Length: 391
Image (tube, rainbow, N blue to C red; front, side, top):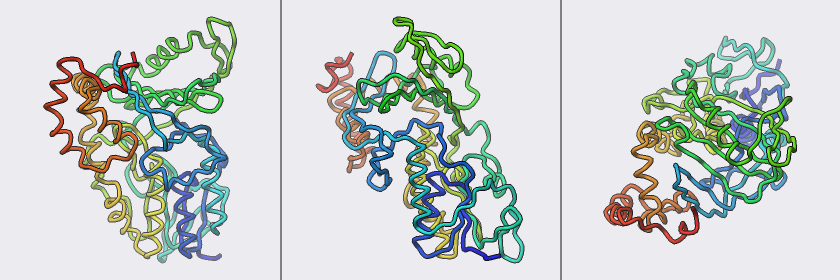
């Protein structure tokens, strides 16, 4: 049997991006994925930061974000945006997967169940052969478990929610923190073209997550669950679709976990399989796409361990910082202080720039410079003019 240069396991954003990049670099590629097209448990928001290279066609975009808001108790910080996009994950994933095939990657419709390394060659499922392996089959998928230890439950977020069949009236992406006081995580409300994607993202095993989401649903769209994934609206009696979804997401609690290499002489992991998800909010799409491309670049140099250098030069700073501050920022005390300062004229502009992904200064230095004025403004209840109309 022919020996290809690289076998990519998993055809999500990381795997498809890796397969496409490797093919465009002249490598022979087999992409293993058994379940396209498919829906993914995800809010479906492409991050504002780095969206220029996320490669999302108009056919996969449901709508453009008009704003992003953060809410804690009765304080809401709403920030207009003009670059964020909301996608259908099934359409977008399938698009990236097809782009990999168009670039020349072969496709094997099989789940990878075995990897055997003999005579410097990998044998996949006892019949396919490759020089290198790129593992991109998700958190604690086969390649993660084969090459490394599983990511423990303590270092996972549980993400779950519903597709609620109500047409949104505004394209506002919402993040609601403090629904479970002191717990690390948030509720989300993402508008789509014809429905809401609503859910929670909390440390796996935290009690009360689903109840907090149901409370939010009762406040926004009063009603009750009825049989077969339906929601009955109390005011009109209308019964609408309310399909449930769920998954696990890496969320490291210790920055030292990012010190552990995710590559070897003949293999490399990327995306969720590598744990490359921001530990604070669980966003990983940009790191998946970029990580997949960087993994392929390393393999094209015939040294997968170069991935450690590549990913660290691009986004390790965000990962380490998020893991170091995760336990602090979700505390009720810090939430109260943060939202009080965030609404002030001194701080809101910087927060808005960071959220939009167009901040070019040094945020930490600017924060300390502006902090005294922000504290004074917060003491007197002053808030930025953009927030005065928001209750």
